[in-house]
Length: 284
Image 1 (cartoon, rainbow, N blue to C red):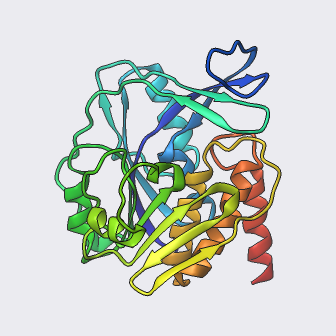
Image 2: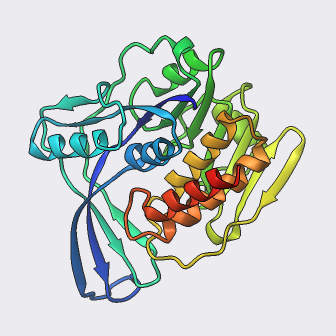
């Protein structure tokens, strides 16, 4: 399996289950489900670790008990946490408000600025995944382009994301640009871009490339909690590409992984993904 380096957030989620969908000016009852491990670093990393890949995570948490708890939780899933740095500020919870239909609204803390140092020697790695707004992320991804697969999530701003595969959700794309999707992807990712994948929940995902576009349907499943679905999708896509599947076959894998994520009550991948992976191993 592959050696995969992730740069992504590590969160402590505080989950509030609401009694009805959120609307402006409404009043809501909630049930506090307590703290749980979350964030793109854990959601994507643990999914890939379940599939047998060797994962290292670069992130930043506070130098406090909650930061210790987050690192211990991730290490328990056999992820290398030696690249995680500690800031002096408090590690704050991220609030997840989940409605009865499984959709969630996120209220995140204002984190200290995260600055990346010098890039790694990429000859030891098979893939780099960037899902962060940290300073220096573009330099890291650019340095890896000629050495390994680089996959990146579209950022919250228009900063460049040099990569081979760019991922965004349809919601991320709202109001971004009047350019056709492929041209916009090239604007963000540069000439190295081979595929721009835009996910759209139950409507599936579309991949854009020089050759045109192609849609891959979502897997139908009951939505329990949509948290982490995009992270699981990214993990499935990376798994497919690092095991030499085509982009379309990798998107089918990603759709299965995302379906497992939304059918779980946790942010990180649950038993559904483990069962799916075990079942596929038995079929090979």
